[in-house]
Image (cartoon, rainbow, N blue to C red; front, side, top):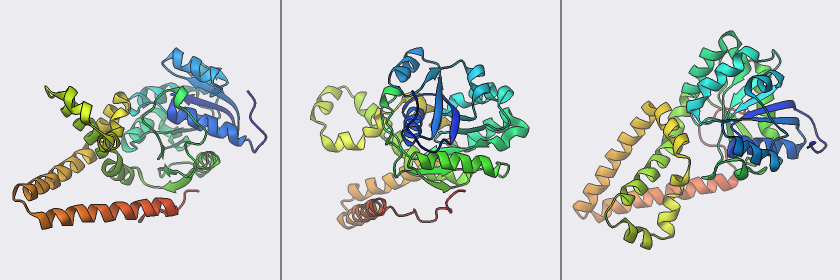
Length: 308
């Protein structure tokens, strides 16, 4: 399938992990006319066949051959698989090629990349698209997924500026807004606003499902429960890997949340209506301000300058 007319940024794109993140990247670039040829690599042949049939990719490739042909590689697997993928890429990586990832953690991914790429670490540009859904696989991919969404570029001191600019341009072609952040700040930030909420959702649904009267509880669970637990519909493998990869920052957030929850429990136990009003009111106002900022397209407070 040929791309519509546009500025070709990537001649041969290889995506490892052609699911929601990787597949949507390919579709968005194709729609923008920014890629000539897309090769899919992955563990599951059925998913790759689906990606080919749906026009997400142009070809199913074998890892070593595909990586050797690529001038742009996106690793969109769960973070627990990235070390193995980087090790397969490193021996055949072209001097003009760039490698990036779509992982939700960055410090562990950077460590894996340093180990695999060695002196070629400058060709690796860590990234994290702040977009997604609880759906998985190539059939979940959609070209509009990244439009107006944030993309964190966590370039390293050794990162080739031209490689960083190329990765930023590709994500911008997908409609994303690119921001820079260090890997360390990234992991602390997303432990609080992404990883912790997912753990809470999984833990709540699991706790209710284990009750002897779970069927009754689920029968009466309504939209509030559905909305709060939407995140528990995500990939268990992916969120297991994220939780373990970012465990230090995540454990800090879990401990702080547990302490706050204990305080709220105490307020309820002692029937302290004023204290509960203060907590609930502050949470409501903070959430409203956050939603207003999203709708206005505001840059988050303290965010770094736009990446090159």
